[in-house]
Length: 126
Image (cartoon, rainbow, N blue to C red; front, side, top):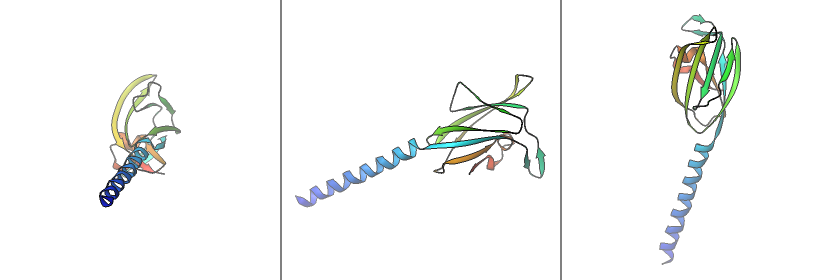
């Protein structure tokens, strides 16, 4: 009887630890430093965009970036969506959307130029 009770208690403790880890990963906050600066991609220099609107996780208010600007966005959890609108003369010229996953690092640098060029290193831990 005592052995059965001990096994049940151990299983409950393991379940509690598992739920705690899952809640930590799902609720962890991250800072994204969004770059609209010149970048070198495959040996070519790519200039910054004149004006960019960035929407994180379906936000209605964009993060606005001018040329050679860097802004911070905050997100929670591991799974995210990003939509980037490139503007010229106050009109949307191109729109890019992507889903991405972040690790356990606290902050990341997101390069708009590398994301548009579809490079793998567009999101790097800081």
